[in-house]
Amino acid sequence: MVDVAAKGHTGTEFGMEIERGKIREFAAATGSDNPAYLADPAPVSPATFLTTMVFWQSEDADPWREVRMDPSRGLHAEQEFIFHGTPPRAGDKLTCRSRIEDIYDKEGRRGRLTFAVMVTEFRDEAGRLVAEARLTGVETAGLGEPS
Image (tube, rainbow, N blue to C red):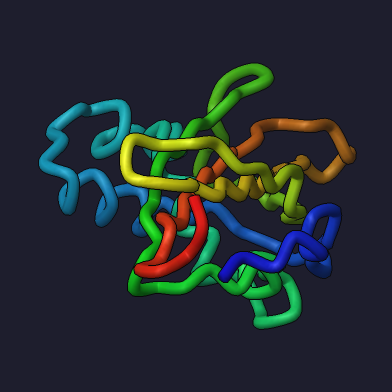
């Protein structure tokens, strides 16, 4: 069951270096042959590349674990990326921080749904906000739980 006390919890800051080879690998893994990702010596990262942040996070940087969503009833409901300019390029060094922005309930066709929203901010070396990733997870009501 989701722990509503996780709302507002913020993980520790972590760094993420955007690497040319990783952009190429990501593009290949997603089936892209876009030369903007493959041929440029300092390629721009694909829009969803920032999901690779999980490889850069330490355990204390990830506040999602505080949500305590039951994995047998949890779903990844939505993922959104908001860019405040062009996406990061190879060679960029970002500072990232994730927080649990919201936890709320809605009534579904088969009972209560509990939503949790985590926002990760990506900042450049000057501290400017480059991008935000918004992850929404949902936990469905368990058997015998009141709806």
